[in-house]
Image (cartoon, rainbow, N blue to C red; front, side):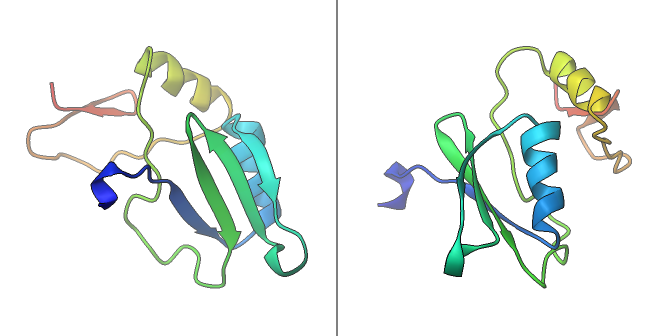
Amino acid sequence: MLKDRNSSAIVAVGDIDRARTFYRDTLGLTLEAEGEGDMAGMLGFRTGETFLTVYRSDHAGTNRANAVTWDMKGDLEDCVRDLRARGVEFEDYGPMEGMAYADGIYSAG
């Protein structure tokens, strides 16, 4: 049942204004929805054919795993260069079995 459904990511943040600036201005996503009233503190960004929902939470930042992934179309190296120019920092997690790391990109061949 769920295997035939689209999915989207939801990310908890501590500072909704900072998140709005990052996802809209730095990553260049389109802000399509912004919660008001009881839904204040929620943002909806278009990402391809899906949405990324961002919401304010006192528990934000407690997860050290992946929160959002995107399918890559086009030149990954160009995308990384563009994001770096916008101030995004790429993490080097050290050696990983079967992976190579160069210029902010891990690859498995």
